[in-house]
Length: 274
Image (cartoon, rainbow, N blue to C red; front, side):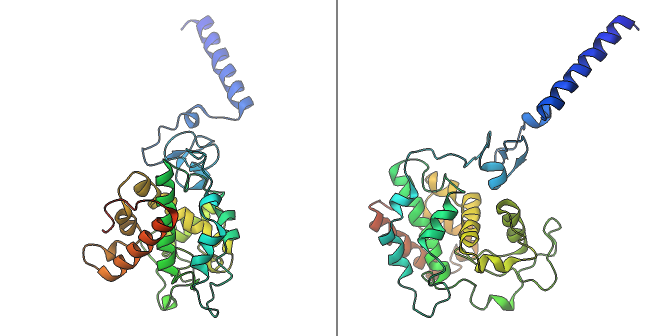
């Protein structure tokens, strides 16, 4: 072995280690090589949710920056939001809980919502989101799934997000977040203990809306903005309603959607049903 070459190699390796330690970065982390459905985070790791696809996201389905200059607050006006919220009877637990202020506070964490694509794309996505919210909450009346407490929605086969004792993962919030794996993943992305404290989704209005956006951006955003139609979002939210599973609830969702599209001045497009 050539001693001079060995020394030069050691010096080179030492120099690289010094550079890496000084920058605090890992070469392999900088080049994620993530799967197509995963984001490369600002720190170079693959995953989904706001921690990976939010601020600093390098590649993948990032939602860190809007792709047009439209603002959701200009579309979801007080008048638009209140026309929905004011339909909830005075005794509804959601009345006064689901507010435009909480909605706008939550949407700041998901700036690609309602800003992707053309003007019509933005308005269709917002109409679709509120159509499902209106249906799921009974016009912003319910914080918690009606009769949901009788079911724990615990998938015991899920080892990543194991169910906590005496906790129920029934529907809560604008899109009625359900199941332990959704509470666990949403909490991890947003920053709350979804497994041990699922009730916060029904008691903190901003977190409540953020869970809805978390679910939407991971499951519905790409379908509605890519032109697959409103029907694809129904399948993403509750596939059991599709293919004749419950034509009445599908019709309800579609009616809300077409109504909101009309209010926002946009054609609802095709493929409305699933």
